[in-house]
Length: 143
Image (tube, rainbow, N blue to C red; front, side):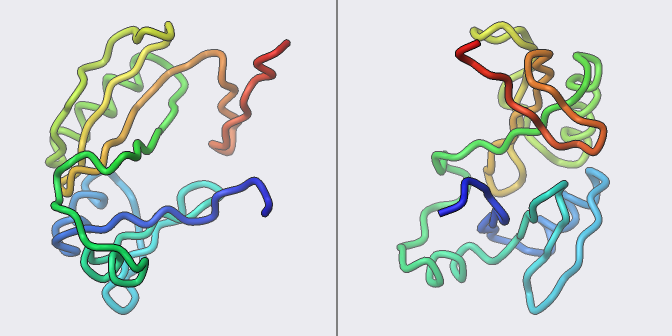
């Protein structure tokens, strides 16, 4: 298996509401057969009905809003951008679950949940190179 992720699919309880939320954040997607696809840098983010996603994955659907064991991260280039993005997410209907602060690891971050409870971390970590095209280059941790 190659070491990469190509798609992240979020199971949503109300596709129209979820699409409106991501559009309010400035995302532009394409809806095809009750599924919304967003180009997100070098990968795709997909919104699909929670029940359909569970059935397609062969698992029982869980309740929306509970922690699903996954956090999506959006790195930015400054602490100010963290604050601005958290405020924009809140205006779009997000619930800020962790106001921006210097975290235990030493970089600035905050978090919010979308209307279906998917957690997004917004972070400025100067140790992670954020390339001009938005891709992230991890440092050599052992160096």
